[in-house]
Image 1 (cartoon, rainbow, N blue to C red):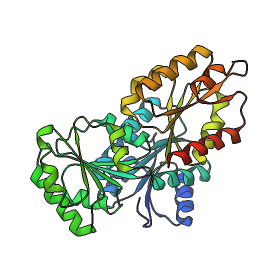
Image 2 (tube, rainbow, N blue to C red):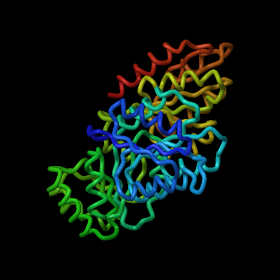
Image 3 (cartoon, rainbow, N blue to C red):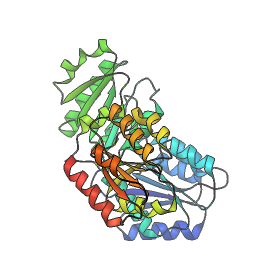
Image 4 (tube, rainbow, N blue to C red):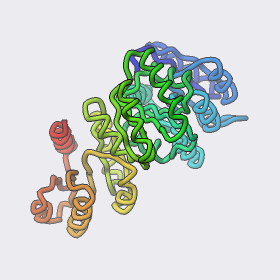
Length: 358
């Protein structure tokens, strides 16, 4: 994300929280506007552009999720952070599915807000240009889950121009429709900003010939539909993103501290409740390593064999119960730790894997 002073919109019908949060963010150097309702937030968003939205969910007349959807449509590159003190699962899930970055539980410490902003601004920014208005939301959400900030727009120069002011790291362009208009916009963007970011052209096989024409504008790659999340990361490269750690079957309280510690050490986490969910979603995801909690020796053998069949170059770290023999993981050449494990031991191992990945 750009180094310019961030503009933040704080939306909450609770006066004390809204005013105190806005005041603290202003003291931290951010440009902040406030809205006391979802309707007011939408009106403000029609007049001004913002980088980040902090919005309560439960509000009268228009809830925060509804407001976020409208504002996201007005400003596709805005990052939405929802806040709630209630168990509003449907509204939370709805907001997250529509591209909200996260949902924070009230009450929260200001350090949590600042850490969230830091996480947002440290992520690579992807702009997706789609002229058919049918971008697969699961694809966009998967890009976000895997550590990118994502904005999607049709070939509208004004909208895309504003997104480019945020200095995108990668551009994904659907070229199956309105090719000439898309190429014209890319030329104008290059004229305005000097160069294009790494660019992926996505289309049917017969559109591959366009790459010659577009390569005169900037560095481009062509990927035949359907595009996979892993292909985007292959083009993006490793230098300017977080190290993605997939965590499987680690839902107990004993892992809560581990997850928070990994986040604080700049790892991006992807969570799966069990190995079946992980394998079902593998094609929609991208990760550098896997941390899996295993209960029995057969779990290790079966999981590792299936993982190697699907992704032979991905390493795994197994968390083993104290009583399990480590013979199997030693035979497989895997990294492993026994419970109870020391937090520093896990972080050191993850840092080692991250260094090897550079």
